[in-house]
Amino acid sequence: MQYTLKKSLGQHFLHDENMCRKIVAQLALKPGMQLLEIGPGGGAITKYLLELQALEYKAIEIDEEKVEYLKKMYPAIENKVIHQDILKAEAPFQGNFSIIGNFPYNISSPILFKVLDWEPEVDEVIGMFQKEVALRIASKPGSKVYGILSVLMQAFFKVEYLFDVHENCFTPPPKVKSGVIKLSNQGNPYAIDNKRKFINLVKAAFNQRRKTLRNALKGTLQAEALADPIMDKRAEQLSVADFVALHKQYQ
Image (cartoon, rainbow, N blue to C red; front, side, top):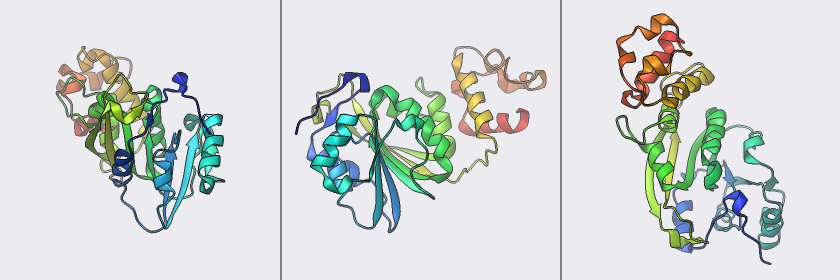
């Protein structure tokens, strides 16, 4: 049975078996763990995930054709694949779970915001992204690519850039480089009590990243906050801890 690639869904399928095994090997397996695969597509890593013992596996796939293909090719996935848009999905498990996926590059940022929504229950994420996005998530203050995703993901997760994935590992080969990262939940290490407000602060700071924070945050913070000397800086100069301090003091 064949399937078609849908450009509208950003589909590029892994075919390199060694790379598939390498990605699956990054999971911190433990007895009884719950695992969600996002966007299994043609089942490149799915077949290896289904072989793992002592875990409960589910997959979310938006493309009906791929859902039918997976069920025919891998009968063990019956009742484990959810035909739904990940961005509209409820958490697939009760209690904590891990996430793995070759994420569709055209919605990788929204998927990360979904992970943030689920963060209290998400132990770890092994994800393949466009390399540029993966490096951005892992980047440090002062870097040109340090931005919203860097701060938000690092506020809750330890971020590790694991390895590159060559274009020739895919069908069709994407025009961009790819990279795999690992996000390990740190248990809200900064004790952020209002995630929504914190996200809004970080977004506002970076939405006008060439301006000083005083100008960028004019509509977000009160005059007292804008008088703080840190407001002379630009968003990319602030560490995650700096953003948390601003949030706690002024929001």
